[in-house]
Length: 141
Image (cartoon, rainbow, N blue to C red; front, top):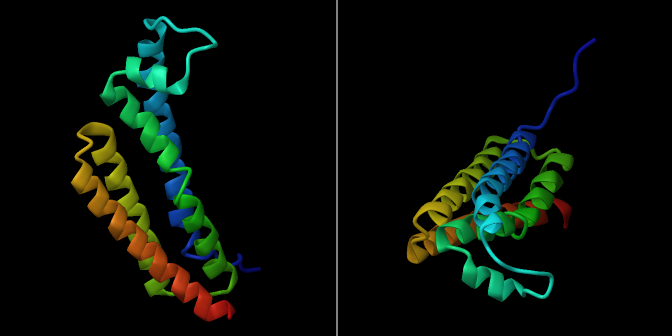
């Protein structure tokens, strides 16, 4: 009895999800010690809390939130491609490229936060995702 064929598109999905947990852990690792020393209560707004939080701590939380935004589109499109049986080298390479660029984006955002470098990486990842979306659209329409 042979085992079922696993789509090559699933590994990039799992990798980006795992990376999101890495960023979550990094966020907690930096925020908890910072928040212990801050004076705030239940009436403190997010803007006020952000103003009290050092930027290099805030960047990790901002990036974690970003990983819960556009990558959700990636998960959906990669699953469409996998379910549609479009498990080919091009789509798998695009998926891995997207994941790689998003990880580099996270590292830039969370360490130096160089805005133009971050923006360039975001544009590249968006282009990859748009290409994947177009390829999925050609399959389903």
